[in-house]
Length: 81
Image 1: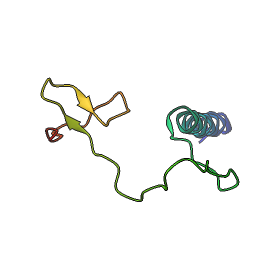
Image 2: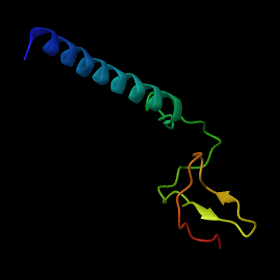
Image 3: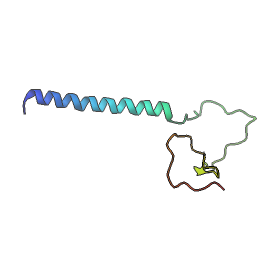
Image 4: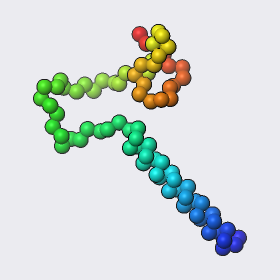
């Protein structure tokens, strides 16, 4: 192996690592749901939060998706009740 081959390979590997990191942080900032911080007090007029499960994705009678915020849709989702 020549030194130039090692340099090219290292550069490509570093480029892939940097691209992966940048794309991951972009996706996290763009699509992740914001987390409420504990330092911000909750309004007193709102009801107490429930710890129940989030509604699952389902297909309505007209074929539209309910409870699914993402552009890609899971296959074989159940019909809405």
